[in-house]
Image (cartoon, rainbow, N blue to C red; front, side, top):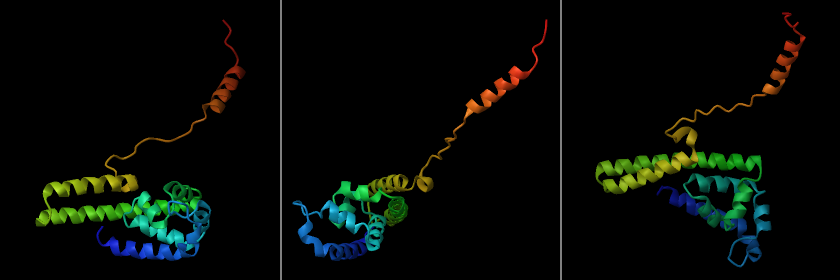
Length: 172
């Protein structure tokens, strides 16, 4: 995760360039307005930067801070369209990979004696949890074996009743 610091600073710089012309459109807390955020979300460069920020390991809250957008507005933007949801899903899968790599690095550092085993265990537990949360299909310990099906027995039941009614009744 340490190697992502330089890429994160590049993304912050790029974001500042994207939002620089609209500094007077900020809210009192320094965030850009919702209207400006919605306009910014139409720019493909925003989505590239958003995916890179999330993929580098940033939380959703941190990503909102990088872009100067409120968390709720960024969430609304990121889940508002199928393309945005796909971008966010790709970013989360990449972030899961980043956390898996980070866990491997921590395990290696613990093995080499660079960090305490207890500290490595904490890092590994967090990295495992985050990877499972971001990409459960790959990193979950349990396989989801639920069967999801919708069965319409109404039509079959009615057909069976009709067939039964058309059969001759046995005479005693």
